[in-house]
Image (tube, rainbow, N blue to C red; front, side, top):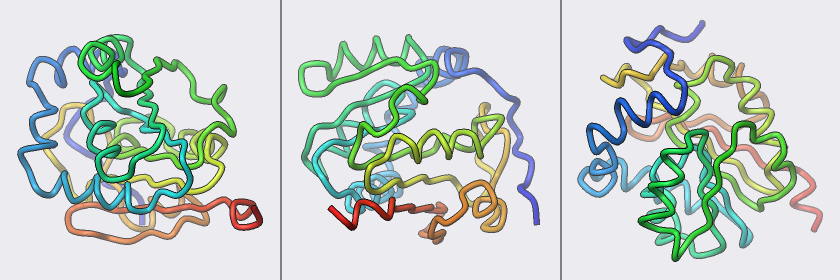
Length: 191
């Protein structure tokens, strides 16, 4: 079974941040809705090691939440310069943030990587997953909504089967309104 089409049209990261995230103050949902709080806590609970990346951090609010749940050296990474500028203004005294047009250059840099609520926005989910795996020395966690949500940048809704196809060898579970795909590099267990 393939993925289901979402209601939104593709928007590049800069357009999404400026026309939706910043305009509508989307970060309020992180603190204001328990389901987002639980999702980020679960992601953080799955991390091991001391260096972590929050890929698709937007304006840094998710990075700050993840660090509350799992202290360590967190770096927020986003594909929008506007998002990173805003994250640095608000959280730059506590966390590292980096703009990244392509995450391939970050191979092997983080013990754990969280990419929450991003994969449903991209044109090539399998390519994103491969780049995320290359970044990860230990555990990678990717989350995505189970059902269609009213977000202008969502281009697909994953089924369990389509997420497994985009993310081979990951353990896929449903936790509330989210799919969690968890992958661990086998070499991490040999250290």
